Structures are given as structure tokens and as C-alpha cells.
Image (cartoon, rainbow, N blue to C red; front, side, top):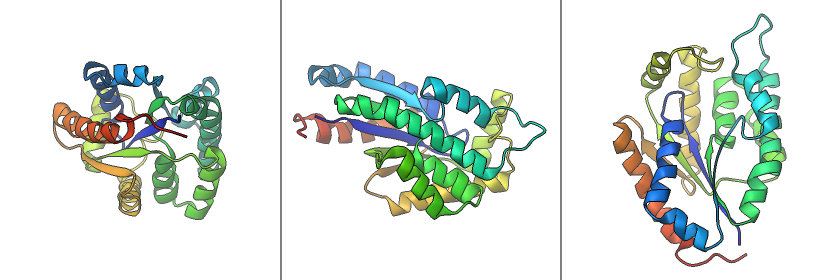
Length: 225
């Protein structure tokens, strides 16, 4: 028995964190969590960066306020890779090995979109680092919350203080959005586009429909292997 890794992706302000929380609640209220428990599967909600104790320190370095010494782009890339390596080996794989289901806020696609398209780093290098950090672990389902960049950034500004990534100029974030668009086009087998421009409940309804369909395929009958 092996588990499933479900990832939530998107630009700043797309609502990932909110929708993960709503999805977690829906899985409980809909009875899916109880059905998973009957099969010996537990549910885990986590994030990148910061899904481990070490990752929390790396998250502070990556997303903290801009300092007098700017973080170099390759430094940023390697710190994200370090966080992911720790997260995969110490958290994700052990949980999946027990048949668990994971809802994860960001994963490898974010590195491709942000450091590849956004920062302009070599995509082949990024794919190699992702392979090293994950040891080949890919998401079973990626929910891409597609939202206009300006709308997303306006949402983040309304929250108050912006983190280091959110402070980048709009051209950077537009390149990031291009990256997510290309990833969705290249990986239709695992990436589902969610229109994140509507109300919170409308977005949640789309996600719940996608999860319902996937869970019926995955868990109606016990998995083997």
C-alpha cells in the first residue's frame, strides 16, 4: 500500500493556503477522511518551504525581509533544494510509505516557475536538482490555482507586510505565471487547472470536485503495491 501526494500551486495571492485548509475540512466533513482511516491511511497537511524543523529555519532565510546582502539566485535555488531534500526524506516519503495522503502547499513546480522562469536560471539544472532533492518523487495530483498576477499581488498587499518573494517586481511574477502555464500544458496527466478568480467558495467547489473524482479512482478499491 502506498499513498498519494496532492500539491497546491500558483502565483502569490492565489489562495493556496486558504484552499488547503478548506480541502482539509471538506475531506473530514464529506467522510473521505474516515474512509481513508478505515483503509489504514492518515491525512497530512504540509508545505514547502518549512515542512520540517530544519525547513522552518530555511523558510525564514528564503522569505524573510530583504537584507543589505541580497540573496543570489543560485543560493536561493540551492536553499529550496535543501528544504525539499529534508522534507521528502524526513516527512513525505515516510508518510506515503504508510499509505498516507498528503496535501502539500508548493512542491517542485514552484521551483521551475519561480527560479526557472522567474529568475531565469537554467531549467535543466533545476530539473536535475529537483530530481536529486526528491529522489524521483512526483506529485500524484497538482491543483494549479490560476489567477491573474495583478489580482494576486493586490491580495497580498491587502494582507500587510510582503515577504521577500512577494516584493519582486510584477514582471518577475508574470514570468512565474508563464512558468505555471507551461507546466500545466506539459503535464496534463497530473496538473488540473483551477480558476482561482472567483469567490473563495467557488474555487473550493472546483477543488472538491477534482478531489472527489480522484479519490473515487484511487480509494474505492484498496491499492496494491
